[in-house]
Amino acid sequence: MLLKTIRFTLKRGLSAIAALFSLISGMFWHISAKQQMDALDASVEAARKLTELSIQFNLWAAYTAVITGVCLACALFFED
Image (cartoon, rainbow, N blue to C red; front, side, top):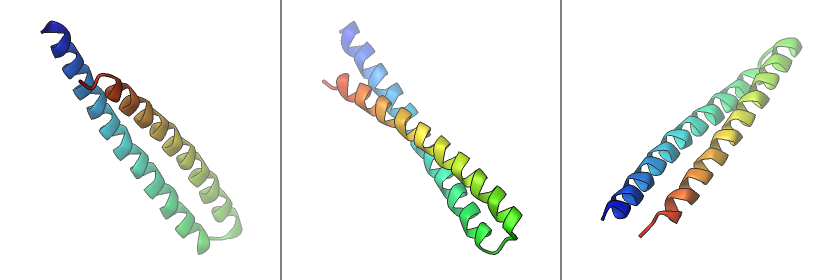
């Protein structure tokens, strides 16, 4: 009974973390896309800076997507 409760709690916790990181990843990709759109109408130097920022946000989005995937995989491990 205790083991079942622990598995349930871990599954729920990992699922909540995955949901949070999925939201953060989407936010990073949204910001990146907005920066790329803004770069279209910017001067050459500003466009370069916006593109660099966009690349950084894409990296962070990818990192958080990996964390999301790991959390979901672990949550599936604890599935009954």
